[in-house]
Image 1 (cartoon, rainbow over the protein chains, first blue to last red):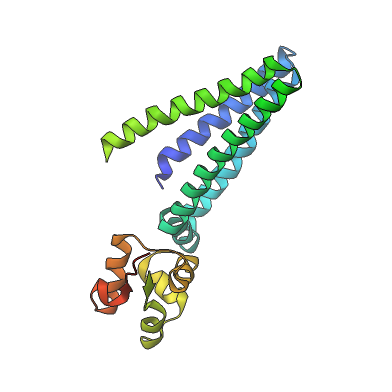
Image 2 (cartoon, each protein chain N blue to C red):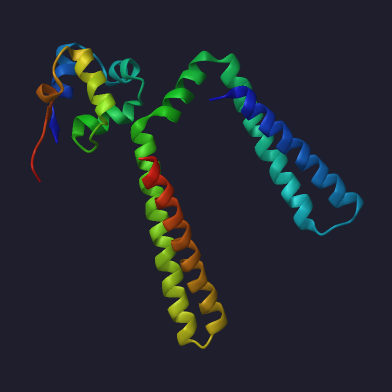
Length: 133
Length: 65
């Protein structure tokens, strides 16, 4: 884990979160922006605390390093990602067909476009991965 | 693929956690390897072979599916 880069990233997220809340409150924007800002702050604070613990607690650092580099963990994560993508495609396909049947073609078309976008991204990714390996 | 990891680990009087620490993997990985549920990468197989002073093919028994 590159602690310095990660810390800078989460400090930037923290500042963005604070700015979003301030702008959202001062300019009286809708709740979306303050909600987004709160999310940024919460994630940043948790990650910064974890990184501080990583720097000061060698046992915790070792545990994190192992879990980040554990090959079975990576394998499980990749498998789960592939399965998730397949499920999303099947859900979109089923939803699209059901929506067409119930005369909601506009929404059904949206689902089908979703599948097309996923497939396009897949072909582009596989092209680059294929070139790399 | 079958393997002799559990047998060798016991011979060397190591716990699963000891072996995991030596190989810098999680204990769950050792459990899965011993049960034959997960096949290791060539890098990890090499590390295991070096640790137990054996050849890879002496530890991992390849079976045609």
